[in-house]
Image (tube, rainbow, N blue to C red; front, side, top):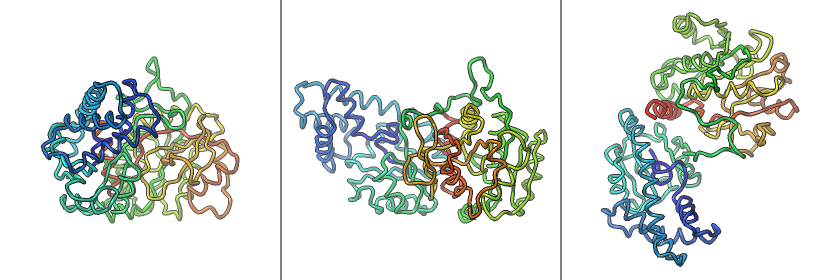
Length: 453
């Protein structure tokens, strides 16, 4: 399920912010505390008053005219110019999103839940996306607004799915995210394309399948051994209907373990060490048959914790740095390659964590990161980045004996950050921690987006 305004028609930028920027660009420069009340007044005036057949263009024109009138702007044509640019930008974004929505509609039941004016269906018709959605829930029609859980339940009932099997994508933390959490389905935030704290260390992904530098040579010149932690039980995925071992759970037809190995191979990482629990022995034979040319050291062991599994992996192929990934940290190949390239440029004695602004975890491990990429804290309440399950581990940390009492890998990372050891982060915009059925749906959405974009 999707929000409409700011999500499908913009890159995570709400209507209020878009309208404010357009008025500013047209010469109406003012402080937000003056603009915001004018926008809300114009917005509220449209709720429930527009005929259901009001077009997208007419809706935007009335909104812009209401804002201009409330602000008493002297330019009589400014509202029309703002509305024209707003509509043009929206239709361009919607046109770009339509191939992905069309592909998703072949695989999933889709819906829109929007705080709108009563004419959402006509607006979606004008945008050319109406036929792709099984339900359109317009707050003005159902009598409740996000974040009320009731409006989300209305869509779930219409689609005939349970909250546990639904995913909601929106642009607003208080409206979209809180309401979706209350219905116990997975919310995901549509993020605008901007850096974090002065800009991402990594650029957004290109259309190339393997990122490269000028001249065509990969920037990864250091030789790393690689490790994959794949010893988890996958109990929540089984509860969601995935009967196969967790490493074999498919994302857009490709098992998690295959995606992870492909990523490491594309980044020229090897040899590899892979740990799996004793119930996953058949996966070893599958991997050997699928990748007969790779040098892989298998560890078949049921461990007591993620930290024990981490320790087993980093002790293999000793000497130098090792790139370790959990099997359920899913991202597109080109993003992974760029992470390895960026991590390789950090000091050789530093631990480098992949971090992401995409919070797709019930208990995310938050990271506070400085503008230069140095991680200042792990596990606190501050920071809008979370760890992403990929680590470049220096030799000093590989040979380190963790203090007694650390139960999980996240506890070790917290301790490492507070011990004064050099710790850096590299941002990957989209990494999904695949623990539940709705995580699979989100990862498949991103995978398909890469195929149709």
